[in-house]
Image (cartoon, rainbow, N blue to C red):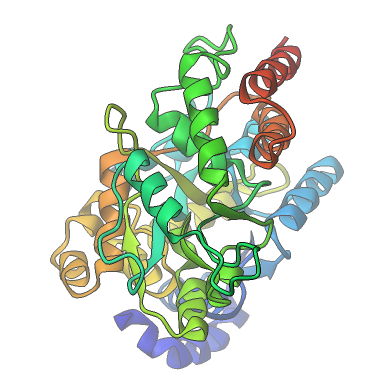
Length: 405
């Protein structure tokens, strides 16, 4: 957090030079509280270093609000210069984005960690910024040794789920599942089992094959020993009614606060996976892109400079240290500074290990927005036990097939 000790001074200096800035760029984001202050500090320091550029950070609400506002702005021909965006948004407006390899320093591009490099139809139009990964959180008093496999997780959840008051109703659960969150509830486990949503050439739906059914069966069994509740896991964890859950590493501040409410010590581990599978986990968070529509060449060049600044090793490390996100460049992850943080704090070590051993991103199909929506619907059906796993997967496959055809 070294660079953020000078936030106040940088802000004053930035205010002093903003009046002479010749280029103004806008950056739409979703950050609040500590995350917003950290981003503002980065922008202020950038403007001190680049007095010809004024960066306007524009909070747009949650991710749902941001996506709706971006669609509206694009329809009106008035998008921001830069914006955070998920991959399944990017596929909707590729033609409106700048090819970043034409503006960003090649050395900066080469330093982006391979797990975060994504091309859309052969184009590099986004770069990582606030990227996180799903890890497992747990109560250290009830889970002295976190499970590493599906079988071990099920066995422990079975032991921990109980009626503590003797009234005949379960009031403590081994795990927490969010039914409307496919990343947490299904897609990670599908990847771990070797399954896919579509074939490699996107011509066949594969989500209901043997690997998909194995995943659904595991999820169905896990649900028996889980509090199935749509709330963010920090809620029931803070109430002291669940022992384990998986969630984004960017949720660290909220989960730490929940552990304090429950009066327990928070533990971190990689996500359990099948013994014959792989230790995969989904990368979360968003990338940043520059819109070409409505921007001058000077604005595009200034935005590229700002991205380069955000990706400096010391800046991505400071950002990660404060927010719970992950440094997004190889030089940052391999630096002595980050190695020291991993040695000092097991959280940083676990999130980095999870990224390196099995981080994966979204399916970059142009219809993934709709595909993800129907997956969410059927994951909830499976978890709630409203349909047999095979029946649900076959129906899901039919809907996905209709979408892509």
